Length: 151
Image (tube, rainbow, N blue to C red; front, side):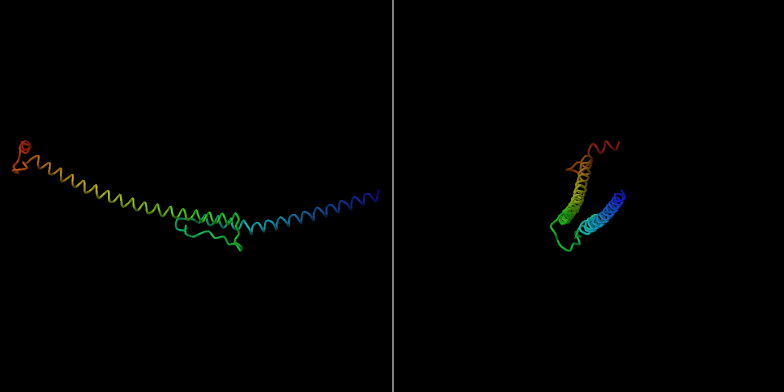
């Protein structure tokens, strides 16, 4: 029986040693995977998020450029391309909107001038009609309405 206890004690010691070694190896491997993932993905995702956070109409010409040693055709490259395409489309839309607003303002000003000219014409026509209602057009003499208003 003494040998049995010693055997169990050694077995548990070896098991503890194996578990601790495997735990340390797993933690080191997880740390390595996290570091590699951070360098390959997370840094670029943060860069993309920062770039998108700084977007404004004035900064739409500044394209997103990921700082990568090797240009790969992967999801990050696709995302970079699509963000830049979106920026270009948005910039073109805003430029078109601005030119449309300028054209609309010019049309509005032209319409206001036309309305003003037409109003002046109508005012002159009304004054001419008012004068004709009081004086004869051929002779220039006062007519009946003029004398009725004098009473």
